[in-house]
Amino acid sequence: MKVALIGATGKAGARVLTELVGRGHRVTAIVRHPENVEASDQVDATGVDGSMQALADAIRGHEAVISSVRFVDLDPEILVPAIMESGVKRYLVVGGAGSLLHPDGMQGVDHPGFPEPAKPNSRRGGDLLDVLKASSNLDWTFISPPRMFVLGERTGTFRFGKDHMLMKDGQPTSISFEDFALALVDELENPKYIRQRFTIGY
Image 1 (cartoon, rainbow, N blue to C red):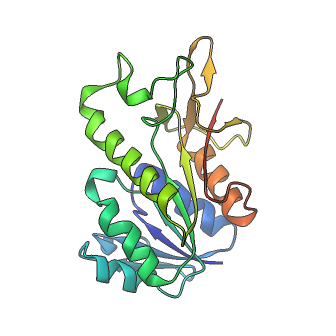
Image 2 (cartoon, rainbow, N blue to C red):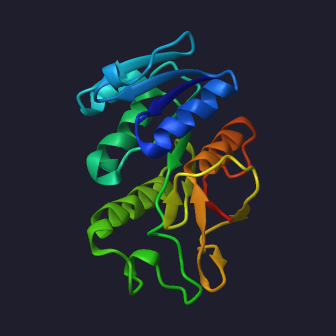
């Protein structure tokens, strides 16, 4: 598959890139600094200035687009229109944990103990999810990791959930970047959650 990956050099994005390449996909890495991407026969790096039209032009012609960027760094009001303008229908998001619901029904970002510095990014991620829910032109999937999103191993063993945070011993669980990338590319290849959000965790 020919895939546009926005944010291919971040902690999650780099693992998604590795997973895509390992499964034989061709990837256009859309980043601010293309010199930081190791180009290969399967990977082309493209720099964009963050404008809607430049982003749409970089995405156009792909079979799917994946975004793995901090929500405060790329406004949903630019990102979603750019994808629509590109004509690409399949869109997968490396989502956030802040919009997941605790067992008491409260969003993670509003729960006591949620890190204050992370709140602006989490709220913007919730905004993106709301924009996608209201859209009718994209086959989107929003994949939320748990709050503990960490370096680790590619185990292939984890649980799935929908809008509620997965818990372990009464606390939110975790997931590695590597297993998250595995689950995301599985969803790309064999869609099960079109126009839905899901979460994974140990």
